[in-house]
Amino acid sequence: MFNIIPQIKTAIFLMVTGLLLASVTAVFIMMAISGINEITAAQIGLLVGELFLPVPIFIWARNFKIDTRHLFRLNRVSVSSVIASIPLAVGLTIITDEFDRIAQSLVSVPAEFSKFQEIMTITDPLSAFFIIAVVIIVAPFIEELIFRGFFQRILEYRFNDVTKAVLYSALSFAIIHFNPWWVVQIYIIGIFMGYVAWRTDSIWISFILHAINNGTAVVFTHLSKNSLGWYEWRGHVSPIILILGALLLVGGIHWFVRSTPIAEKWDGVAPIEELFNSPPEVGG
Image (cartoon, rainbow, N blue to C red):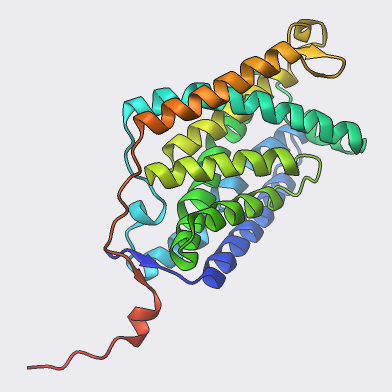
């Protein structure tokens, strides 16, 4: 198996193709099972569609016999890095929640958005299964495979600039959600997830950050206003909670950096151009 780095335009083409494939699949599933509850059909469609996002990349990798473990940064991480990522993730979730609240106070969310909220609401054991599977497990894992594992790694190699790679991958991650009311929050989270993916050369820590953020959103969606009195203040995050979140974020970053040395990147990589530009072997 090889560790080949494709061109940026190839990566974008594969990602867009995966998005189209996932969208078509989700719509097809929803139409095929439209006889059942509409919300359940949407939840099933989203789950199945999400699984098709990386399919074009897998097909491309198989065609060139590329090592998918390195392609998607499925490398091991230390237990200490995992533990240190927890306060970082909690603090980041609190801070970005406030950014989201500020954004929504400036630009109101249209009424049509309530339909999406309805799809993300747990009403029975079946909907709980699909929401947990899609929002907390499958979506974070698939999206980390694509954006921090596949795309950012390509940008790091092609740009030879980690900062640019992280910023561009975070921007593409924010855009692909097609939600202008969450774009600032998603972009900030994407930057942090890009950094930890680069530092560990793995998507597992960024997956933890992603899953905790999504899981917290699911939990808060199902809490009543009265039960959030300790957390909210005049429609925003309580100043005390914000200070706690900032301390957790700063302390978590410090702990994570101290416990996580920069991972050595595998030197056995090559641009895909070498497959086509290398001279033919001469027989003996």
